[in-house]
Image 1: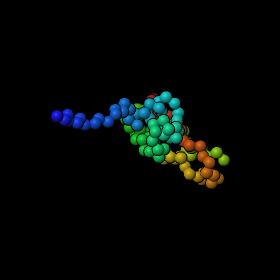
Image 2: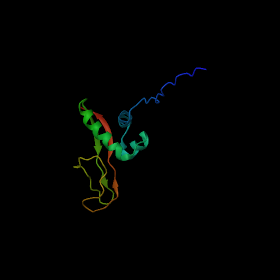
Image 3: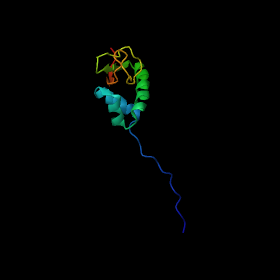
Image 4: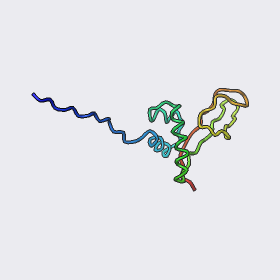
Length: 110
C-alpha cells in the first residue's frame, strides 16, 4: 500500500496585522494602551512600540496620532510636554503614583 505524501501545514490566515487592528480601533474612538492591549490580545508594553511606529508612518499620509496626555489624579498635573507614549510612574509635582493613562486617537491632517 502506497502512502500519500503529507501536505505541509498552512497556518491560519490573519486578515489584519496587529498594527492594522490598532489603526482601525483608533480611527473609531479614543482608546488607552490598556484598551488596545485587550482588543488585539498583546501585552500592553508591546502596544507602545506599535503606537510609536504608527505615529511615524501616519505622518507620511498627512494623518496624526493624537495623544491626550496623562494626568495626575491627586494634583491634576498634566504631562503635556512628555514625548514618550507610556504612562508615567510618578507625578513630578506631588510625587503621587495614581495617574490617568494617556489616551490615543487618529486624526486626518488639515
